[in-house]
Amino acid sequence: MKSNTAIAVTLFILATAATVRDCTQGPNYCGYGLLHIGDYQSQIYQALYVGEQPLVDGGRDDLFYCVGGYGGVITFVENCGGKAYCKDGGNGRSDFCGGPPDPSSQNGDG
Image (cartoon, rainbow, N blue to C red; front, side):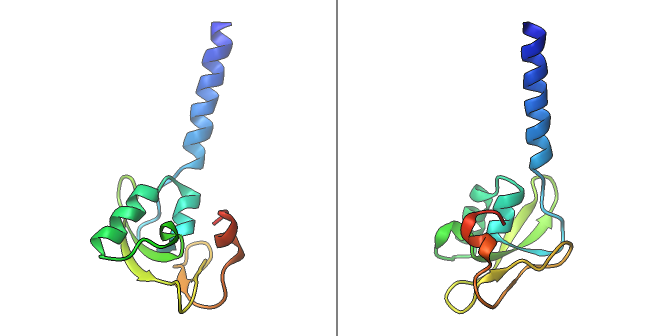
């Protein structure tokens, strides 16, 4: 019984580690995209605070630059709300502000 529990715990840890990653250095990311790839909420709050930005929708519709490094350090770039929405630029490309809302930003799928 103990070995089954140990195997289950090990598989859970490996599955969790596989679903969480750091942002890639260089591109800009929408807040909802950062939340999709990892637990970035506290870093988003900190980047908004340092950038002297209001906390709107938990930073989901704001644009952040990935400095990189361990933990995927981010900095605030631009607030997309109001005049436009944060849009997914696609794999390996920067996200950007513009156009109608991205459906994935509304349901949390990033």
